[in-house]
Length: 254
Ligand SMILES: [Zn+2]
Image (cartoon, rainbow, N blue to C red):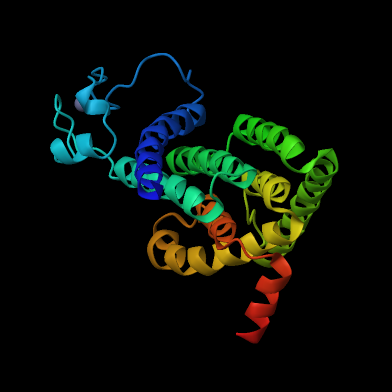
């Protein structure tokens, strides 16, 4: 029975992932989420039912639009696949619990934030505000109002911590070191994971993101999109599911 749930959640994850990609990229371009229906970005041809199947449609069309034969971004099937895996992981790690519901909600917003940040280097405020409200509405029945308020305050703490890092970075590099979106993103992490985990997500995100960006991206654009790595760091910490004090102990021992 467990496998049945895991496979179903994977499939749900890929379908939702495909929708989240659309939401993320349309918000980045200030477009409506509901209208027009999904279309090819190049020739604007409306996608049929078969072309909307996550991952498979990309593979069947060999990564090209059926109508104009332009290459489609591999980001979409990869992100759909990762969302599927994350949805399954939520169940494997948390089982049927409030933690599971909160984790699914958090992952969903992370996928939207990452697509928007990759598409246009923007983390829309709408996503962060709606994400925070959704998470708090789940925290209240799950852990009580005190927990939700405490996490909200920890979010504010994480925001100011990140702001401090930005000011330090600006001083160090003598230019804008970080976008406002990344600072606001830390508020969202703080609300979900608490202050210590939010701060650790900066550490984990930088550990993964800095070497990759310095090798591949910085040379080209001189800009490092930090948001996706922060989200990856937060997701890793969510799935590790280890209390922050134990985690820090493990890091120190290592
Ligand atoms: Zn096309």
